[in-house]
Amino acid sequence: MNTVATHRGAADPRRERLAALGRRAAVRLAGGVLVLWAVATLTFFALRLMPGDPVLAILGGASGNPTPETIEATRAEYGLDKPLPVQYVVYLGRLLQGDLGASYSQHMPVTRVLAEQGGATLKLTVAALVLAWLLVLLLTVVTAGRGRLIGGAASLAETLCAALPHFWLGVVLLAVFAFGLRWFPPAGSDGLATLVLPALSLAIPLAGFIAQVTRESLELTLEQPFVLTARTRGLSDFAVRFKHALRHALLPGVSLSGWAIGALISGAVVCEVIFSRKGVGRQLYQAVMTQDLPLVIGISLVVAAGYVLANILVDLLYQWIDPRQQEQNP
Image (cartoon, one colour):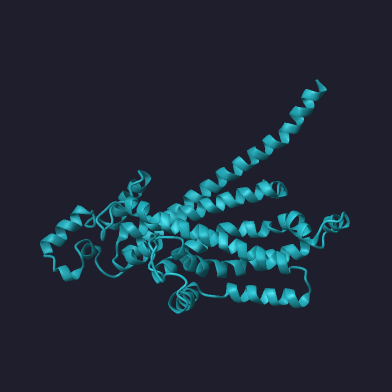
């Protein structure tokens, strides 16, 4: 009986921990819904305030010389003749049904455009995030706690990397490695070679930012008593850094990964234009230029949803790695 009670008692903390994670996830999801509503509302009204008539975009632009009758008929067909509050209510009702509408410029459902273009952006974002973390580990684990000279040089490199604009870095990478050395193709979305330069242009600034936080955390961790204990057991410096110190030092970087995904998606807009890649970033740029309202709103919502979901997952991962946070943030 005592053994059974002991097992039950040992299982209770796990159930409580999972329940706490579930409650936290529910709160974060509720907040995410509010964020999506705010994004949808702001995007809707901001686009309506832009100069120009969206009906002309539907009819192929002003160069098509549509007749006044055609313009009025199109305006009625798309519900643009109704008062703005009515358009907003209809728009929210369609969103609740999962209907993102049809693209004005491409004459196809927005969901189809997202399905065709989303894979390329997701591939670029994941590749950039992986490269960024590889650079972070290379910079911090190898140089942290190595003395003022090495640490200062590495910290300076991280600061410079974090300050690099995506568009400038992309142009430099194109000029050097595509047009100069001809190691990689300058444009396209097919094959691994076309992914290297745009992923690097996104990863290097992000790596510099995350490395600054991770370095400080790692240097503090290397001074902790448990690290000294590991060294006295005869473990190599490499084993101490990777097996003991790094696990604790990664927590600040992990908490930034949710923000990093949002930053990468926003940076993908620039990189996909510079490198002529497929993706929702390039589609968003073209949609804004042509006043393609449904496509702009659809892409904005999908990007916001991805950002919200990434932050929820990262937050739960952080709570799971460090249970002390659950006590501080019930």
